[in-house]
Structure formats: C-alpha cells, structure tokens
Length: 528
Image (tube, rainbow, N blue to C red):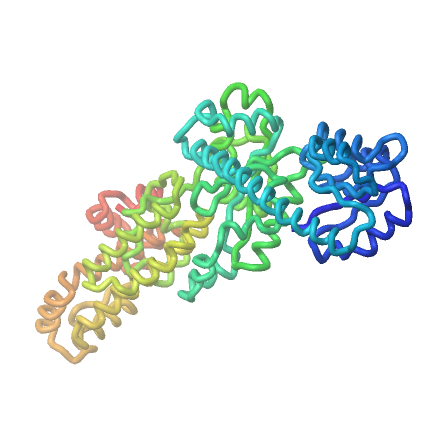
C-alpha cells in the first residue's frame, strides 16, 4: 500500500530538500504536493486525498501547531508529523494534544525521517487492513441479505443493512447478468468433445475483476450462473451500467469460452417505499428469460418492464419427450424436423433448465436401460452436458442438446437390436426398410433371403416380437403419420406413397390403429 504526503514549510529550500532527499517511494509514500503555508495546506486537504501532513511549526498566520489542531478537528484520519527547530515543551504538549504522530527537530538526518515514516507506514497498513476487514464484513452481510431477498427467504423489512443501502442510494439500477456458453462451447457439447473443464475452472470472483466492485454497489448470485447487482446511479452519467457491463463481458470473453448477456432497469423511490423490490427483481429475471428463449437479447438490454408479460422458457413434458426420442424411427431421414418432434407433447414452463434436463435425462436413461440393459453411453454424455445446461440456455439450444441425446439413445438401441438379431433377420429388416412401401410380401422376402416363408415367419415372430404383417403395417402407418404432419399432400397421395392403392381402406386401417382419421390426425398433429 502507498500513502500520500503533503509537505508544508515556508522555506523553499527545506520544501524542495524534503522532496528530493528522502526516497519516498521506497518507503511506501508519494509526495502529492509541497506548499508554503497552512492556508494552502488546508485548501489541498479539502480537494485531495491526503494521508500524512509533514509540516514545519513556524509559519506566518497559521502555524504548524494550529494546522495540526484544525486537521485534528476536521480531518481526524490524517496523520501529522512536525518538523521544527523549536525544542519547546509547550509545543510538544500541544502536539500530543492534537494527535501529532511524531515531533522531529531540525536539523535531522534523512535516516530519522525514514525511520519515522517507516514506522508510520506499518501503523497505517494495520489500520487500513482493519478498516477493510470491517468494511468487507459489512458488505458481505448486505450481499447475503440481497441473496436471501432474491430467494424470497426474507423481505426488505427483515434486512436492516440492505434497507439502509437501498434507501440511501435511490434511484439505483437492478442489473441481471447471465453467463452463457458461447457458440464454440455449445457446438463442442453437441460433438461430444471435452468442453466442461473451462466451466469447472470458472471462478466467480474473476467475473468482477475487470471492475471496481466497491464503486458499483451490491452483487449477489442467484444460482445457474446468474448474478443480481444493485448498481449506484452516478450523477451526470446517463447510463453508467453500460460501460460496467462491457468491461465484465470483455474480461469473460478473453479468458473463457463463455459470454455474458444481461438486462436492467432503474428502481425508483416509489418501488422501495411500497416494498416491491423483490417483485421488481422477479420481473427483470422473467424479461431476461423471455429475451433469451426467443433470441431477442444478444448482449445487454434496458427495457421497460411493464411492456412484457412474465414468460419463462417453454419446453415439452420431459417424460413424454424422452419416450418419443427413444424411437429409432425419429432419426431416419425425417429427423431433421425438430419442431415437429417437439410439438408432439404439451409444453411446460420451466424456471430451472438444469432440473428439467435432469428429469428428461433420467427418463431417457430408463428407456435405454429397459431396452438394451446398458445405458452407459447416454449416461456419460448426460453427465458432461448437465454443467452446460446450468448456464443460461435458450429453449432452442436445449432442444438441440435433447436431439443429440436422443440420437445417442437411438444408436444404442439400434446397435443392441442389431447385435441381438440373427443375420437372417438383420437382412430381412434391411430389405423391409427399403421395400415396405411397395407392399413386399413374406413370400417375396423369404425368396430373396433364400429361406422358406414358414421358417422366416417363425424366426421373425421369435426375434422381432411381432408378426411380419404387423411389422409392415406399423412401418406404413409411421410413414403416413410423418407425411400427415410434415406435408400438405392429399390423403390419397399419402395412401399411395405408403403402399395402399385404396384410399378408403387406408383410412379405415389408420383409424383402427390410431383412433383418429387421417384428417383428424393432421389437425391434432400428435402421435396417437
């Protein structure tokens, strides 16, 4: 720590000598000025931060003793060291009475000055450390109260220290910052790469290293890499939080694979008086989630809160979605229609994406385990991706991750079935996939495989679990459902596309298997 020294002496030779002879920087001080009178010294003290005044006693108008008295009364934190040619007991008495740190006699050697100021620096260091500790404890208490307010554990009335800060800084800004994965990090997650190490190494204190937190206000984490800040409003500055936000964001971008988005609003006296700070915090959180989910918020935004409803991230029912995505047919050539897949179940509003993802992944693991007996591949991916979901993700990004998880699950199921089936059945299923739209018969299939139809029928039922005709019909209906959802083709065109020459017969079969007519299914748009 370095401390400032103001030299006061009416003799220019002594002033300049004290500036030049003593190596002030080496002992932890810097000379911020050298003036010739007590009046000048007082003017400097009023406009500049001064830690120590090093003054002569004998000066016109305001003496060094009088200067020490005025400093003692008006600026008790400033230390005074006197340099005098008068070895009078009365001067020493007054110096003690006015809290003078030390009384040096002229002439004095450089070593004496260095010794006095070295000891003084040690005491100033101790005092400053104590003050900082007390200040930090107080700030920590207020920020804990802000965290409790955010989580609805207390009201503003139950937090006297926080209330004092709030009432003394009206108006101020509520700022919500959200750490989010950048594009490279998100892509690496979908590619099964090692991406989460940087998240584990991410240190929250480093987030605010780029700024002077003390000059900002209060900062509290609300989980999910989200931070609420109460930021002081600077006089004469139209929008102080903009510069502050970009300083933090630039720091994060340069050191991590993360980005920063945010939203903010100003808090008026009316909000505080009516005890609505908590609700204002909730509103701005909902605005941020709304913007993120719909891709409107790219960086940092100030919006009028009343203009928006409190929309949250909308996602499908996790249990139903897991069941849909475990169907390998989803990942045939029609799997690119993610929106179609995600509209096959009712949506729910989500406040905690990580919790939603845990429910979804648990269901997905159960389906894979039930089918294959081994869910290790999907479990490994889920374990790696959950830390990323704890960050701010839009609904679209979560859907992308879900599709990737579904892809892994379907591969595991398909691989398991391939390993369980005999070569004859694997060849049969491959031929069916290619020819079921042409109404391939059991006899034709058996002939191509070099088997009897009776043997193939028994083998098919034993290994696949259903009869050959049932399997063909299911394939046809699944393809028909896809065409009804994704195209505007007429019903007779869809019937022909999946192997039915009679539209009415197709409609009868479709209704028997789904409880809906083709037109009803197209209107509802869900899997029956």
